[in-house]
Image (cartoon, rainbow, N blue to C red; front, side):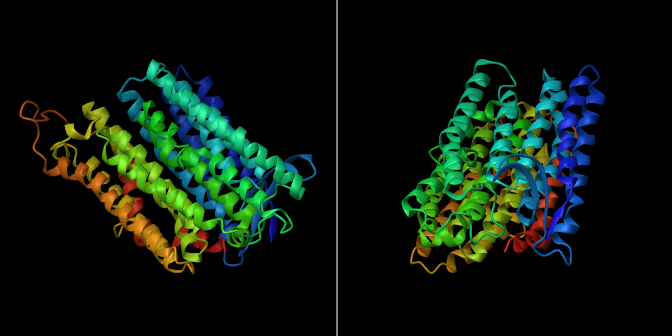
Length: 496
């Protein structure tokens, strides 16, 4: 059933108005940050209010829509809340609340400059991210995707030094070039071929007619796969490690809440609702996609092993972990697709915990390198305990959220009728071992390593509570959704 509602518009107005109020309150820091928190809470409240209509006892297959305006027939700015979009919208809007509190402690603790611009752009980025989640067609998705790119550029360049400008330049060049050079032409050609850019009503049929030349369909498909470069698929991944010059709350935003999640959400949305599983299966697009992202999973994990800088290691971990989402969908099996989609939420809570921890360590100690953290866990037990929990999730160990992902992916691989399942199983096994190899030493060094003789960490303590509480909440939620995954899995199952 289709329901007309303006609630999605109200949800998007919250960060938009919030960013304006933040800019007008620049000289009053407490009021400025209050607006950020209020906007985040209001946005999440509106998003959460959609749950009964999307997932209620009698709501199977419901979608909530609202058309803002129509440009030409088949091309409009139209919003849609369905089971798939709610996964991303709920996670992004909730994590913004945690990030808003965390940012207060981080930015004030380091006495960062331009905090008004920071908070305003942060809100605009969430406006773009949740707008992309609620997009009902490829044009609307593309519009909000670009809003995210533009609004996060000042955040990446926040420090306004040579390193910051270089990282921001790489960020914007990669993302705008791929979007305009690959996605935009593909979108225009899809409209010419189909007369519409609206997403299909289910994940099987897609919108591409069977009469279209298969080679052309494959070209359009791979243009979308690589064009949404926020998904971190190699070789268009290099912007992501380069963006690590930004403050840690921005890194958390990039890697867990908005930017990369917009990338993988857009990619999987197009895979399932533009091309559809039937077309992908008929044209054999799933297996090549699986091997492309498998290369990304393994290569990024190997590079992560070589990084001593904690944020750099986490950055390459993100490149690897994002491809699990696309891999699951590319398997074209029920469990595989479920595993890929649920990882949007599982990865978000775990990865934001890891980046929050990295920021807390830096605020408390000004240390960035793993080699400098031996024994530090005894001075910052809550931070490193949260880091250990989130690491277990990334590895896929029970009872944390990532285990649900790995289990579904493994089952989905075994459901494949193709003989390629052995190769995918090997990728999942090797990537898990690599996850252990680059995450376990951090926790081990922190709790069991010997502090440097000339630096016994005297006087070092946990970061401010405004930072520690959000990272602990995110870590605890990672455990809760690992033990009780049904709430988010209900949305995943409703996709089918």
